[in-house]
Length: 311
Ligand SMILES: [Zn+2]
Image 1 (cartoon, protein in one colour):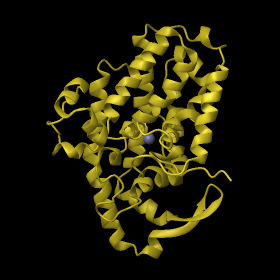
Image 2 (tube, rainbow, N blue to C red; image 1 turned 120 degrees about the vertical axis):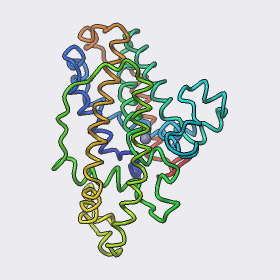
Image 3 (cartoon, rainbow, N blue to C red; image 1 turned 180 degrees about the vertical axis):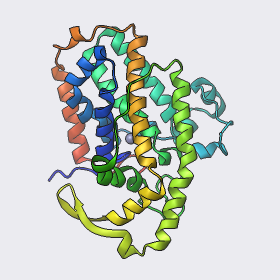
Image 4 (tube, rainbow, N blue to C red; image 1 turned 90 degrees about the horizontal axis):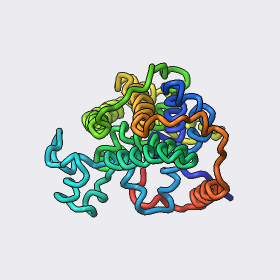
């Protein structure tokens, strides 16, 4: 039997919401094309996580343990890829994660795809770029205590990025955000988001620790419904209390993710010379693309463990 794997990094739910809502921040010339492909952009928001079950090089693209480089603002770490490689070497950078740089590689790839008017590449790269940008907004994707494993808080990763949005986003979060903006310095923009995440990681861990003192295990966890199944998970009451303590941090980071994704898509399109997307609307995906997606799905459904870091 094929059993879907657990969600990772913002959970599948939040990644899909983020790409979906990002479409509506785009200017009309882009909106017409992206909206026509919104199902694709939403479905494929989670491909990078699926790939983590079959490809060893994938995991480090989703995070950076920035505390490995000292204390905030981590001046020991050069922000430019070439300088960071020179100082630490590729193996070490990969070992602690490369999300801020991978986002920039993906933006360059998207800009090229727009200039080449390569339809499948535009769609695939936009969907996946959205994923990595959203990951960089998650505080625990920028910290070596990424699942509370060092402080007896195992499970906090999915608690913050999956359980809270799944319980509260549709009913209480506001995703009216405005418009995408052109980013004159995307590298700086991405690093700023990463640094916000790094600063917030401490509260994410500390508040859960505090709250857990008031909740014995039988109040902290409950058998509740998820995707049509009853399963043991953080209780609704505990989830709401944690979200309250965080003063809406999860909603803010989701909103910021949506803005960042749309702004990066928009910036890549502008930098490619604003190609006419209306003219591209008729081109469907090729058969080889469909086969590639099919294979990715199969290997993900059949996979055992995630390669590299588990969350
Ligand atoms: Zn991820």
